Image 1 (cartoon, rainbow, N blue to C red):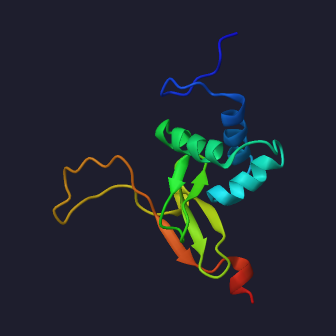
Image 2 (cartoon, one colour):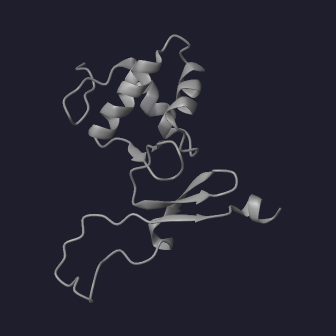
Length: 134
């Protein structure tokens, strides 16, 4: 059996697979520090550098999204389906917004006719249901 590889041709080692699987199994959108803690629950010997390097490789291979601008730290998401994000300004929780709830996905009119849009990202800010209820 041939070793698994990423679309970039890099090997998907056991440690890289662990980082990817951990991200895929959570809806938390962890930052690197939180992800290190989560991964170390499975493999206490994994190094900080390995996790950071793996995140860089996974983002380059488009297997993970780096979510910048959702707070002071970059967060990570293994959900590659079309969706956007909501960030609670009170507790910092980041949640997925399915694409059908995020609004129009094309540019039209006012000088934008003919533009070819590869991607539109929506980042909603506010208070989550828990924080809004307080």
